[in-house]
Image 1 (cartoon, protein in one colour):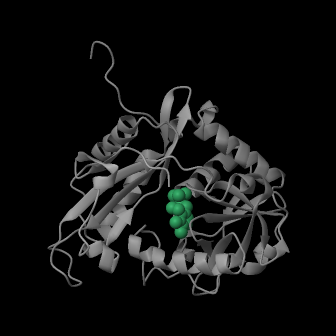
Image 2 (spheres, protein in one colour):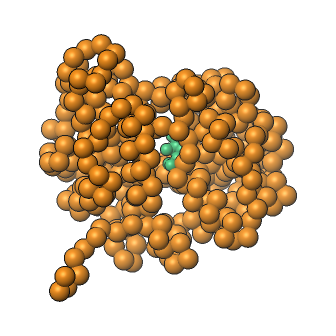
Image 3 (cartoon, protein in one colour):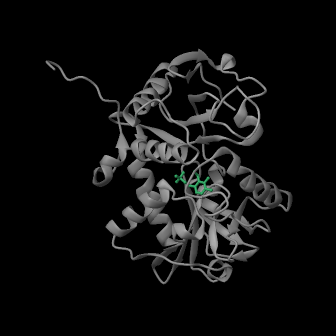
Amino acid sequence: MQTTEKIWMNGNFVAWDEARVHVLTHALHYGTGVFEGIRAYSTPKGTGVFRLTAHLERLRRSASLYEMELGYSVSEMAAAVHETIGVNGVDSCYVRPIVFRGYGPMGLYAMNNPVDVAVAVWPWGAYLGEDALEQGVRCKISSYRRYGPNTLPPAAKASGQYINSVLAKHEASRAGYDEAILLNEQGYLADGSGENVFVVRNGVLHTPPTGDSCLPGITRDSIMLIARELGYEVKEVNLVRTDLYFADEVFLCGTAAEVTPVASVDDQATGGRGPVTEELQRVFFDVVNGRDQRFGELLEFPITATVGS
Ligand code: PMP
């Protein structure tokens, strides 16, 4: 990975190589961490962070599910993110805040372990590859199912929960595919290993409801907003695997993957980057790069004191 200079840890900046934890850190053993993936983009107005507040609110919700007190408000965390970007002198980058149970007593009861908070940033290009943005990715329906709301609530973005995505990702990759798509325990479409899924049929967008065990993705929410503004109908409905096979277009979306067309699912061609995906992808990249003022409020900038204030 491409490193940067400094990582924000519990309120202080430490050198990248010094941002270490003890091997008996609770989260390392039991997965008791929650995190976010956020992107910052270079825009004509400076570096803008895409939907920073929404991401930090999700972080706070995830932390509260696991009974971790952040110790910082959303606006303090937002300031820490902007500062970490500034200190490292990066413009376009990926931002990774993490909140986790640290070194302390061993055993499952974590309430006596410290809650550590860190923010790292680094340059990260197209997650599924530059080519994928045009050509699309080859997906496989995983033999692993996405966990349900009464096992590991998918509404929370918790470190330990990602073991499920790692199994699916490795399985798909071993079989020669680019990405895994997971069904839930009932057999309905949930999401990709790290992306939400959209199906286009007859010009209408369909995506699974969050009750079907997908992460309530912030890119998903943004795409629904943008698509509706562009005049598309968007439906949150139960989807089954044949809805992917018989789609006019399928695309994945997420902070890392941005908007990536799907070329095939289980070797069934899905139309690749059709006209709807292409338009949404183009508008999405215009928005995040600060070229489309209709959605200007989705990019967040550091709050700077105005002259005379
Ligand atoms: N589903 C899963 C399982 C994910 O890990 C992600 C990435 N956070 C997403 C969907 C997309 O979410 P977002 O758009 O908020 O990045």
